[in-house]
Image (cartoon, rainbow, N blue to C red; front, side, top):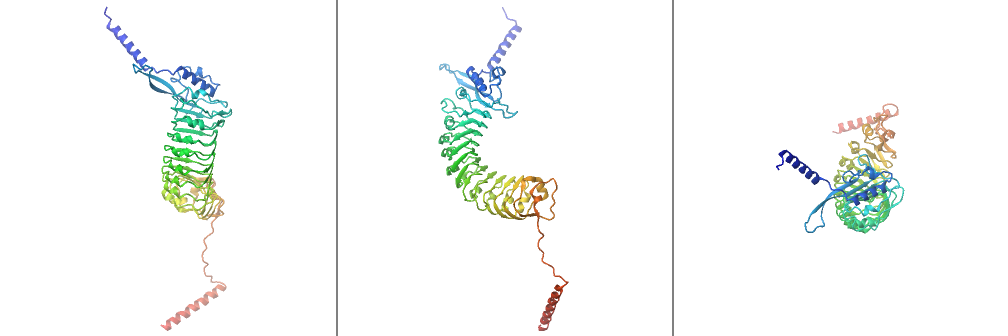
Length: 465
């Protein structure tokens, strides 16, 4: 019996629709992997009913911070060579950051589930923010070899109860691009194995309890763009090999106990934009002249190191600098006018608590973008070049106190709503003018005698001629 055309069309449409639906259906997350996610979420915050809130497939409707990736994998059938479409967890981000990144919130007693390191072999990023704040949690060690082969970013921020050494972590992740441990309780040294992380682009280990010298393995990280070891207990000399990190954009070694001389090899860091070596124990070798060889510098901080010497004339090559911190460095001599002449974009300048003398360069008074100038506690003298308008713009951050010989001009007036150092400076004395010859009193007799001598000489020359 012939099938009516209309019925045939309906059947064809249904078949096509079914084909489209099934062919475009997203593969489900493996059930074991999904269950592992629930358990990890429970370890982070057991007060939230994760399974009931997110009961569907976690790759279709996951909580923020749980990210899946799409993969095509070969099947076990060696004859047909078929491929299977799959989804796997690629990111786990925990700890509420802001309304724009509302990751699953942690509790003060969050724990670090071992399933994180055994159940997600496709994981590329692991992120924890303020998750381990009360109950001590150990940095994982002796991780399985199968884990970490895909991990590219490992980030722990503001987890003061996270304790332990970095040895196990560094040895387990050969393809890391970012390793960020900041504001945690980790201790010990940075193992030489860090040099095996050849793909590393960022190494931030700030605000921990790390100690010892700088690992020579760091010099092998040719792709490194950010190195931040600040606010730890590192000591000893900074190795010259650090100059091999020619891709560096940021180098922060501040607030440690480094000593000796700042390596001359740093002059090879031509791409460097941010250099902070402040508050260490670098010796009395002067402000490094190699800074002039780093034309891309935008921020330069050396405060708290007793380098001594004068401020060198290096600023013509550093025209892009925005911030300079040279506080408490035992600097002497005058402030170079070239700083104000060449650093037109300067926003932040600290030269306080040194032994600088002479005047404040006139060029400082016309810096258009400056928001803070601190020249306190030096031996500066003379008239300051700052106007009332300039002082009004900079306000409290124009700091000149502790220079008793600085003064402002007599015509300077400052509005009541301006609160800068200018309002506290003394008025400059009027310049000395040679006394005019007085006509009255005894002085008139001297003038008359002087006149008679000139008259006598005039007659003498006239008759001699």
